[in-house]
Length: 205
Image (cartoon, rainbow, N blue to C red):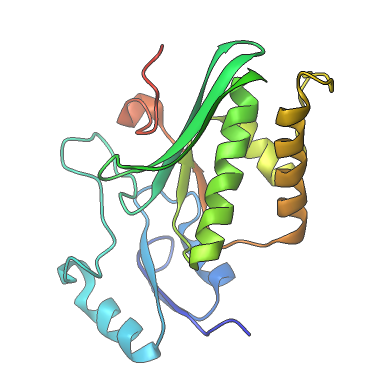
């Protein structure tokens, strides 16, 4: 049985303390500059909520630095993919949004596409965070990958063949994971025009 959590929302559609992720998500999902965090006890949640913006660094949800034109959640992960050709040599990675430290990396592998890499990176992050019991937000700059994850379906023209089977094996496993697991992590669109290139960008444009 999952442990009870209490969700504090400092910046969202409605501030407060919520007892379910769905209630919290309704306040913060898609809300620019949302600030929230889960706590194991109501006492900790109430204390953190009252502290507001004066939270100690170890508890405070991180905000974007003042150098950015708008806020994003620094206590998050960014994912991105790169592909030379379509299909071509593909790889993807996930990095800490604040420190840009690489958290995971896959590839390079042959016969992939950029959209497939973006999709696989999101599911990789979801699976990793579920194992660690974290509801860390995930940023991607791919609208296509967001739709594929939401629909639990990959709409690609990549043919199934002996040469692409290694890619399809990974796609199939990712779809299977989505169909058999739930997750609390918000998956959000990285606003490139406001914030610059996503932190996980491979820098090959």
